[in-house]
Length: 416
Image (cartoon, rainbow, N blue to C red):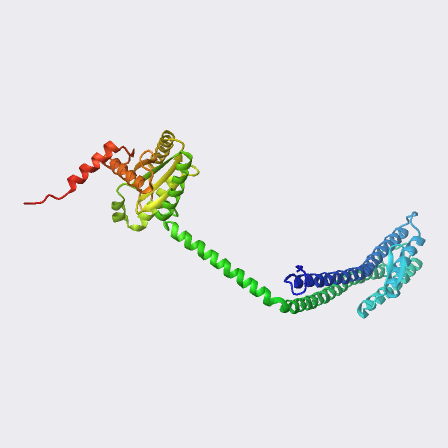
């Protein structure tokens, strides 16, 4: 069956995508129409600015004519006034010029302002002609002051009209945007409703698949957690004894097949019990975790460190021969001892530690992990007897003799 067949989980997604695309195209079309309508209103603002510009030029040139400047004429003054009248009438009735099309204003308040501007323009023209006829060459007279007052009123009316036109366009745009928003919400609601209606017919299958997947995921996570808890030391994050035995068995099999060597090193923290007794188990745990980090930082890729119990750790190394193992171990322990010259914990006070270690090598000393672990333990005990803070390899002739002597000296004597 195709993935997009009826009843498929992808069907609601496809239909919803189509609906959303159509809605988006509709919104873009409405937005483009709205933007084009706003552009048609922009000439109103341009016209108000042109009126102010033409009036200012007419006033300026008229003053030049009165001052006797022969470069300016009354015809140029009349031209600028007529231009201002043309833009004013274009805002009321509409018109066309090289700059574009002017739509007639429909807002009553704005039309009233334009009519006032038109009346003031006529008054400005009348006062200009009267001033030129009565007092052509005198400035500062009442007629001159009245003429300047009408000019300032014209500029004020033009500025007010420009501000109101911009506000009107902004209000129109805000209203269209609000309408667009409502329309978008309505379309989104319709699309969501349609998607929900389609999804409702296929949700049973989707729910069952989701529940099954979630259950499998939970089981996998729980199994992973149980496996981690069963094979990982909770304090240090190292493999525990059970995991260590599995890893060792795997490596010993590899050793047997490939004729390589495996070292089992028993590491014990010297005088750990006094640290616990003096500072408490919290500091003791911190010492163990810090020691774990210190050792791991000196290991190579493929080396295995595990926590056996308490302050006892096991280190596994695989190499081609006894000599290469001993070289690698000697270098590792040399670096570890150098690192342990610094305090392992500095709070609540500086704590310095040492470690004793013993190593047994397979197949030289034994081929079974339990035997290797036992011989490494004996070698570690020999290191402690030799003054602690040392690392020794298992030597049967020396270590077993010392072990036998230790056991015989520790046996209780029977009184007759």
